[in-house]
Amino acid sequence: MGKKYLIQYDRNNCIGAGTCVAADPDNWSMNDDGKADLTNAQTNAATGFLEREIDENELEKMKEAAQGCPVNVIHIIDKESGQKII
Image (cartoon, rainbow, N blue to C red; front, side, top):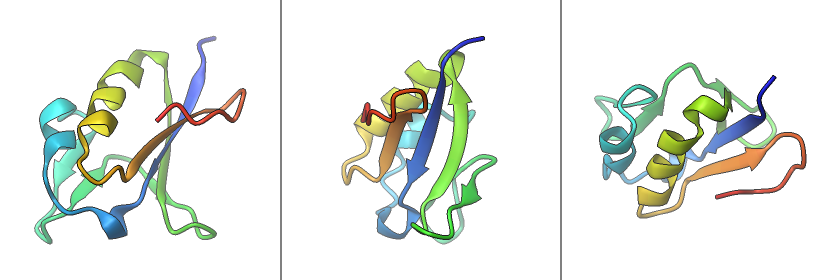
């Protein structure tokens, strides 16, 4: 079984640049309100962030999306170690 990662997305602070969608259109889309949406994400009631678990085969594209974000609202956490990758 491969490693698992947690994606945390602070949608409230998204500025709608769309770089995540350009980098990873399978997992990101633009909403009519001008902000991006993370496919199949659930809201964490404690943080207000949208969250989704991914595995290793999705990691590289998700890293591109996170690194391209001009306001750094996409975070990737290694679920095993708890270490924040981005």
